[in-house]
Length: 326
Image (cartoon, rainbow, N blue to C red):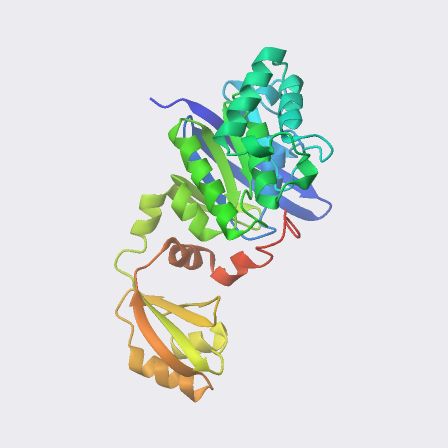
C-alpha cells in the first residue's frame, strides 16, 4: 500500500471578501507526481502557500507525512522542498554558494552540503556556471538552480509552483525533462501549472481548480476516458475571424466550442460533426474557412468541457512570472 505523502482536507483561505481557496481537499501518495491545473487566479499559488506555511488557512487541515501542518508549521519545514514561481535565491552569491547556504539552513553538515551542492550542480547541468553569480544566470538557469535548492535536503515532497512560466521553450523542455527524471527517481511532487499540455505530459493525477475550488480530480487515464467517443474538428481561417462562442452556441447548441491560439476554432461533440453546415454558418458571419480537420481529443477538450474555460484563457500571461495569480 502506498504511503500518503500529503493529505489536505477542506482548506479555505479568504482575503477580505474574496475566497481564494474554497474547501480544497486532496491526497498525494509517496512517489506521485500530482498536478494542480487551472488558470491564473484560480487559487493554485494560494494553495501552495497554505501547504508550505507561507499562509495560514482560515479553515481546514493538512498533513505532510504524519505531521499536522496547521498545528506544527515549523515541524513540516524540513519535510518539504519549495520552488516558488519567482526565485528566492541571492543574486550576489554564486550558484554553488546559494546551494551550500540553503543546505546550512536545513542543518546539513559542511561536508554533506558541499557534496550535495556538487551533485545537484552536475545533475542540473550547471557545473560550468557554478561559480558565477546567480544574478548573471539566464531565466532557465535560475529556474534550474532554484529547483536544485529545493532538493538540497532530500525533502519528502517537492512543491513546484509554475516551474516553466516565463522561460524560453528550450529551457522549459529541459525543466520538464528534469521533473520527469526526479519523478522516476521516486521524488514526490506537487506541480501547479496553467499549461494544459504540461499537466498532460507530466502528471499521473490532475486536479482542475477554478475560482478556488477543485471541480474534478482524477488520473490522467480516467480523465482522458471522458474524451473517448467524442468527435473533434479544428477549423482555421484564411481571412476574417470566428464569431463568438455565444453566437456559435446559438447555431449549434450541441457543440463544445473553443477559440484557441493562432486563430483557430475547435469544436467537439458526442456525434460526428457536420462540417458543411458549420462552414456555411461561419462564412455567413465573415470567417473565410481555409481548413477543417479531424483531430484526436486531448486533455484540453476535457478541461474545456468540465470547466467551461476556453483553452486560450489558460495561456494569458503565459510568458509572465506570476502577475494576477492567486
